[in-house]
Image (cartoon, rainbow, N blue to C red; front, side, top):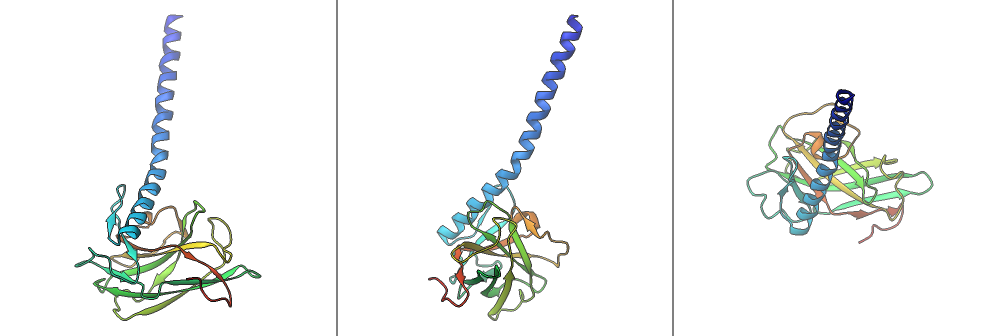
Length: 205
C-alpha cells in the first residue's frame, strides 16, 4: 500500500511540475509583448532608439525629427506623419504616410504594419514598401478594411503605424503578429498613435 501511495505522490508532484513549466513557457509570450510595448513607449517618449529587453529588436520613433542616437544606423523619418480616413458606410479606411529613408542599405526591405491602439490585439502586416534604399521622400498609401484586433476601424479610433526593416527580401510574413520582433525584423520605426477621421473631414491635429 505504501508503495502505491508513494507512486501516486510522485505522479502528482511530476504533474504539478509539468504544468508549472508549461505555464512559464506560455507566459513568455506576454512578457515579450509587454517588453516590446515598453520599448515603443520609451522610444516615443525620449526620441531615442532603444532595444526591447526580451528580443533583439531596435525600436525607434517614427517622427519628423531623427532619433537622437540613430547616427550610423538605418534611419526612417516621417516628415508629415500619418493620415487615415475611414468611411463609416463601408468600413474601409485609406491611409497615407510620408517616409524618408537614410543609411538603410541597398538590400534593406521595408514593410508596413498597423495596429489599433487599446484593442490588446496583434499588429496587422500591410505589405512591403519598395523604396527603402531611396533617400528621397516617398508617399506610401494603404487600405485597411478591418483589423483582426478589435474589429473594423471607425472614425475616432487610434491607430499606430510601424515601419519594419529587414536586411534581405522576406517571404511568408504572417498577416498578423503579436509582436513586431516575431517577424524577424532587425529594426522597427513606430509612430505615435494617430486618430482616424471620417472620409471628407480634415485629419485631426
